Image (cartoon, rainbow, N blue to C red):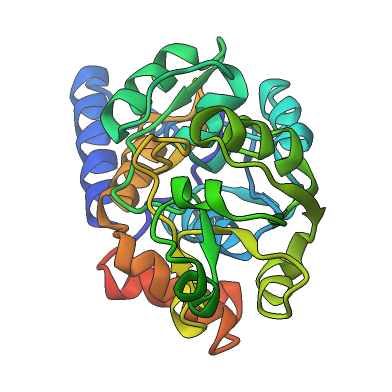
Length: 303
C-alpha cells in the first residue's frame, strides 16, 4: 500500500479524491465518524530511474506530480542499466520506473518479432511478470539508432543500415552491454549482413564518433546531439530496432489515483517535447528538478 497525505493541486486528482470522500460520507451516515483515509497507507512510492539524464528527467516528472497530489515519494535514481534495476523492480523494491517498450520487451522476450509501436506494446503487456504492470505508453520515443557523421555518409553513400554492408573496417561504439544485445553486432550481421568490430564507449559515444575512434555509433533517438552535430541517423527498414516508446513500469498495487496521474503525463509527453527536455539538460545545463517542475507547470499539471 502507498501513502497519499493530502489532495494535490492536480485537477483530476482533486476530483477523484473529492468524489471518493463524498460517497464514503453518504455511506457512513455518521457526521462524527472519522474521515476515511486517502487511498493507500503506510508506505511510500519508490520511483527509480536509469543512469541516464533523459530517463531521470521523466522519473522526476513522475515524482513531483505524485508529491503534488499528496503521495509520499522516495527517489532511487541512476540505478544503472536493466540488468541492475529490473531485479529490484521485480523484488518490489521499486514501485514506478520510466521505461521504453521495445528494449524492455526484448529484455523479457529476446526472440520477439514485434517491431511496430502497437504490436510491441501489446506483447509487452502480456510479457510483464506477475506483480507488475505497464501503464499507458507515450507517443514520445527514445530508442536506439545507428548514427554516422555526415562526412562518412557522403563518402560512402550511406542512407540506411544495410548500406554499411559494403564498407570495410567498421567499428561500432556504444555502452558495453550493446555487444550482447540482439540489435548489436550479431543483429547487424544477421539482419543486414553488416560486419562490425565493437568498442565500448559508454557516455563518450558521440564524442568517440566525432573523433573517429568509432565510425558507427549507437545513440538514443531523442539525443539533441544528433541534430547539433549534424549526425546522420541510418534508416532501419528491416526493423532491427524495436519501437521504444516511453512507458511507465509499475507495481500492480500502485494506487488507481497515482496510475491516473502517470497516464495523463504519458499522454502529454511528445517526441518533440522529450527532445526539448533533453536540450534543457544537456545544452542549457538546467537541473533535473527545475526541468521537471517547468514541464509540469507548462502542461497544466501543477500551478
